[in-house]
Length: 223
Image (tube, rainbow, N blue to C red; front, top):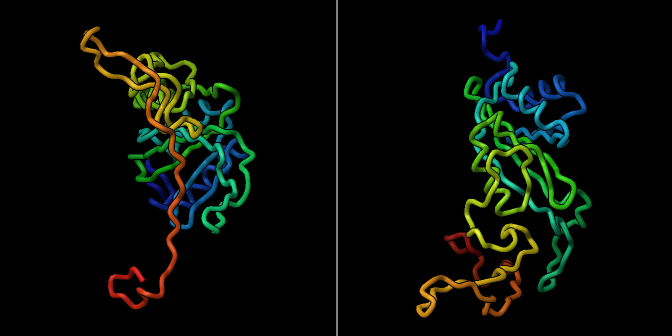
């Protein structure tokens, strides 16, 4: 019999946690377990707040702490291409372009959970979880700044890493590597000025590493 206030699930047991999530939330969550026991649950945006509160407050979950929150841009994800005769990718991603991933920790039961929500619309929108996990405040501002994701209900949603006059969202995959503008100090105007980028755009090609029989049998393992 489990101790009062403690989970009946074995600590660190990903399969048991996954079954508990399926039993509690049913079709609201799409749960998967990685071979090494990491549990990921995908929730619909409309049900995010309800599910998040239950994960924080209910046994046997008690995910009291939000460890991290990040945006994801799936533009071009899985797209097949060919570089130097080597083909990669399995096809074109047909799901929503953006997602938000929440990394949760249960201090009570010593287990972790990855919660993911896919976002529709342009700009992508999702409810803020600041009232559930206060640590989400700056994380959501970061995802807004870098990905352009709007967190509805956030108490102070503004940029946190880039400048106030920054254009675009630099972690989006269609954002140019050199950006749109550059800044410098103008000694005549005695202030920082913004100008169009003077860097020539570059096309990056992935490096393809192949085995080479000239190094076969090397002790350093690079053969």
